[in-house]
Length: 395
Ligand code: NAD
Ligand code: MG
Image 1 (cartoon, rainbow, N blue to C red):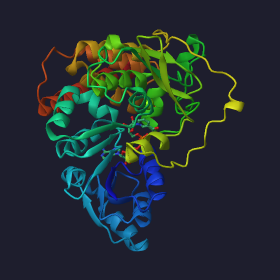
Image 2: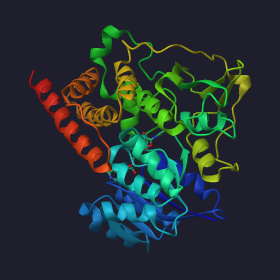
Image 3: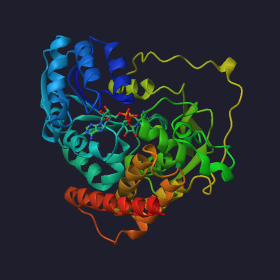
C-alpha cells in the first residue's frame, strides 16, 4: 500500500492520476489532494478518494470549500496556503507525491517533497526548468526518487539501460536522446497566417487533452523547449546529446539511439495514464485503463525536423538551456506571463515569442546558486515581461 499526495489534483494530470489510483484501491491510499480555484471539483474528488487533507492554494475559497464539504459529506481537514502545500508534500506518512501543479507555483511544494526524500512523480516540468541543478542536488542529498511523468521523459526513462548512471550517456553507449513532439496544431499552417491565430485554435491540440497553459506551450513548441531543458536535468545530458524530432502522430513518445545503430522507442496511445501508472507502480506495471495500440489501424508514421522560423520559442529554449540556469528561469517566467496575456486576448500568438525573447534580452547577467535567488530572478523576469507586454499593447 502506497500513500500518495496529489499536488494539482483538479488539473488534467491530477484527474488522470486519481483515475489510475481509484482502479487500484488495495494498492494506493490518498493522503492529500490540492487545488486552486476549482473548489467544488476538489471536494467531489475528496468524496471519491477520502483523503485526510484537502488543500487550497490560498484562503480565498476556504468558506466555499467548507460549504461544499458539508454538502458532499466530506470529512477531510481543509487547509490553505503555501505552507500547507509543502506540509502535505513532505509529511512522514506520505510515500509518493504527484507533482502536477502547473507552472512556477509548483516549485516550492515539489521541492518540499524532494527534500523530504519522497518518491516524486514529476509532471511539473517548470519546477525543474526553473531550478535544475539545485533540484537534482536536493534529490541526491535526500535520496528522493525522481520518476518522470512527462510522456517523453517517461519514454526515455523506459528506453535507458537498467544500469544507466546519471550523466553517463557515453558509458551506456547512448549516442542521442530523440525527443519527439507532434508539432502542435500549426505544423502545416502557412507562416503568413500566424498573425490570425485565435485563442481557440491555439487551445486545440491535435492528439493530447491537457491543461490550458501546456496546450498553448505545445502550439508554440515552448513545451518541447521546456522538455529539452527538463531532459538535460533529468538524465544529466548536455544540449548536444538531444535532438528534437517532430512525429505528428504522437504514438512514439521518445527514443534513445545507441552507438551500435539501435534505436529503442516507447510507443503507446497518447494518454497520460500510461506514464502515471508507470510512475506509481515502478518497477512493476499496473493496468492504467489505456486502450492498447491497434497496429492494424496505424497508417502514417512520419518524422520531420522542426523549423525554428515556425517555432521560435523552441530555439529560445534550446539557447537558454545552453546559456545556463538564470536564462531558463527567466524564460519560464516570461513565458508564463506571455501565455496568460495571450489567453486574455491582450497579445497575439506571435507576440509570445517576442515577449520571451525581449525579456531574456532585458535581464542582466547573474549567477543563481540558491532557491531564494531563483525565486527572485523569477519575479524580476515577470516584471520585465509585464513591461514588454505593456509596451506591446500600447503600440
Ligand atoms: P492544469 O492546468 O490542468 O492543472 C493545473 C493544476 O495546478 C490544477 O489542479 C490547479 O488547481 C493547480 N494550480 C494552478 N495554479 C496554482 C497555484 N497558483 N497554486 C497551487 N495550485 C495551482 O495543468 P496540467 O495539464 O494538469 O499540467 C500540470 C503540470 O503537468 C504542468 O507542469 C504541465 O506542464 C505538466 N504536464 C502535463 C501534461 C498533460 O498531459 N496535461 C503532460 C506532461 C506534463
Ligand atoms: Mg510532454
